[in-house]
Image (cartoon, rainbow over the protein chains, first blue to last red):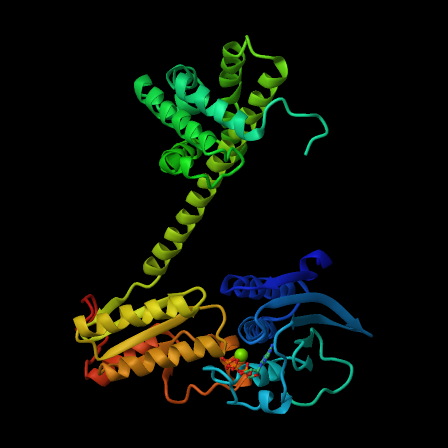
Length: 146
Length: 299
Ligand SMILES: Nc1ncnc2c1ncn2[C@@H]1O[C@H](COP(=O)(O)OP(=O)(O)OP(=O)(O)O)[C@@H](O)[C@H]1O
Ligand SMILES: [Mg+2]
């Protein structure tokens, strides 16, 4: 039986090892909530990108995961937060190919395409919070994009 | 500071304990050799147990002499740290838990304490109490040192195993003259992909490979970093004169790569390792013919 304890979690993101934990947890939580294999893979990949940004650009932080419902739909919400430098120009950060380091610059924009809902809350100088939601069944309202 | 007036200062008690330990190191060692900690590690010869116990008693004397009975980093411990680590490791190999080992170290205290009391029979009671306290603190510090060395021994073991895993997990397999393959399994983090790249490039040189197959069937997640590592490996192999083929991209991963927006356009990909090998053989001009009835496969 799906138990919310296996879905709900607050995991530290301080090392490469922690990234493996995050992926592991998201995969297991998504399976628990009934996501199919493709949706699971997308979620895990998005989480991997966002957690790595938290680690590399945000200097470490946490991921909170929780089950969410809206009407008939239920899904998984992941929140990645750090207290790093923040993102000054969000549009630019979301542009495919833009990187301030040696990356491909595909992480943030790619993660947005892999999930149903995507929100960035960032204050330069005091941190970044990225919230994503994926619905098991298509969400009640059209969400555009995919 | 405690409310009561100490009969002797802390420094004085520590030095008294040091003197006591030096003077009776042989008797203490004899008593300790029969305690479980030493007896169970040095099973073959009691003399060895006595010798090891004497080394520990003398180290404790040096620590007390330097008046650092609280300090697990006291230089007096340096000489016995390795011996203590080996003893702790031996106990844990024999199945003793950390708590058990801790208890065995604690068990070394009473024999010394009773000897101390015997020796100080003529001194004022409150003075003796101060010495006993210093000894108790010192033995507590010894216990921490043992646990600490046991833990860092465990950490070192994990690190060694991780390194071994890195090597074990990246075999390069020769599939055909000029064709090598690496079945990648698990998380392709930066350390792993560095090892993969190095072993693959070495194999390409050694075996004069013209084709290198990277099979990612066992890689659970392909994100932008993994893709970047794959592309770097492909580029490096190309510089060595070998063409890379990436195989084993599962359907769910293929869809994810597309949404992520990764462009693997410059990389030759095949669904399975078998397809990748067939591609390489075809490119090498090797023909495969179906076996004649009853015969073996032809080369
Ligand atoms: N949590 C964060 N804190 C601060 N800056 C961030 C954060 N996340 C992203 N950024 C900024 O946004 C840019 C784009 O991020 P994105 O993940 O798309 O690319 P990348 O991390 O540089 O490379 P990769 O393709 O390997 O992920 C980053 O280079 C960084 O400058
Ligand atoms: Mg990134």
